[in-house]
Length: 437
RNA sequence: GCCCCGGUGGUCUAGCGGUCUAUGAUCCCGGCCUGUCGAGCCGGGUGCUCGGGUUCGAAUCCCGACCGGGGCGCCA
Image (cartoon, rainbow, N blue to C red; front, side, top):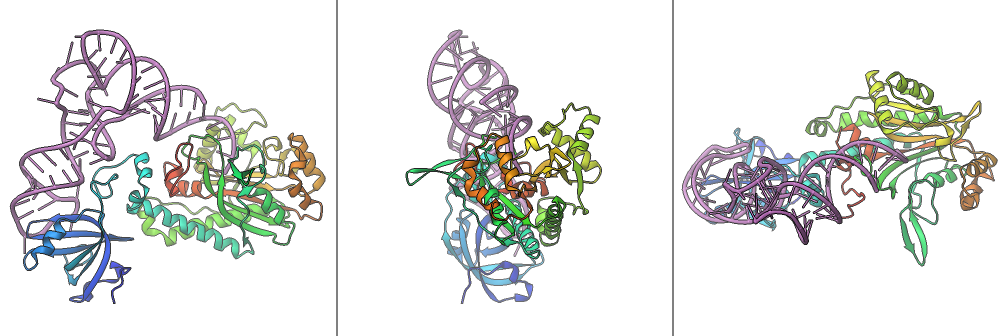
């Protein structure tokens, strides 16, 4: 019985003389005249199949004609050989072409030339045949598993809220509109309102990993129109300190797990992410302004911190050993209506951003759970509470204090691995101009 | 949306008014070669994003469109 899914990793010199059938993509054909070497790639490496002309000329001719990147199954015998990288080679007796590749390839896979990002994403399936590209998504998978596991162990339930909505959720960010049986519907920009509603139910510790959509025409290395948001929301908190502790622990754990479970990937990617010391630095907004002013940047009180300021702060914190830090107590005026203001300083708020290497990973805070205050906040922002009745209702019948965050998985993977563009951390990124593939 | 830079064979590049029937690499095709592993050697193949304009002459200069890269704004 032949299994096509057999890994070359399960074969070794000790299998001397044993028959084997191994599948894979033809990465290279080296025809030396009387002998040919096929470099066959599988999911986590390559092995060599060797074809000798003497004894089986038709097989040799067929092997020499193989088109790179074709899918083949090679049947032969295992031959130990110290000259070969794995310590053994497969002496081919037959080669079945299961799927021939066209030539030339629209994107080099094993060539000695590079390709531009646009060409790569146009041919992403070929791009992903390169080990260094796939390594990113193995790391991403470890990150997701680690975050899930860490929160689940603390009683967080994984939930799924609707991605089709009848109205704009938070206001502000632009929504994608779509047709919905004669009505208008919108792609969800955030699970914010729904996860808060859940806080009133007893499903009061939730997490969600899901796409979020933003119709903002941003052209940067850290924006896409569809991204993966890791949301958490927890009730019965004393203060946003409770939120900090859960989030920082989960993120630190994710980095630890990547370091221990994705060593080969980190090596391929030349990445060496440091595990942060906990607790992370909490940098209040007012102190952040001081740092900026000390570095010669002019900022007015209660202004939002712009991209340059964010980078300056990131560099300053980095010098102090805080690649990751919380930027806390933003002015209430630049935060959404659902954020709780500080009782002793209503112009400030219980809100935060989680910054990593000068980029925003997450934002969150303690939510306003008092119905009357919430309605007043809406009005103060010029929003009609009537449009939020489905949400506000949950605050009229018993809503515990709660808080949470929204965390960008793609950005986190980008920064974790020092990738130059967030698109590198997304299989099929969506931006202003790219909708295919 | 704004600012800067750019679009040359399948891919990545050099060229930036005539010397370009366009450079090099990679790739593809053919040939030689029995131990390659960035295989090597020989021969061949494919190209100036599109539309206007300037000029005796445009890959090269100008304008526009489209597309791409980066920065800003906005945010995850």
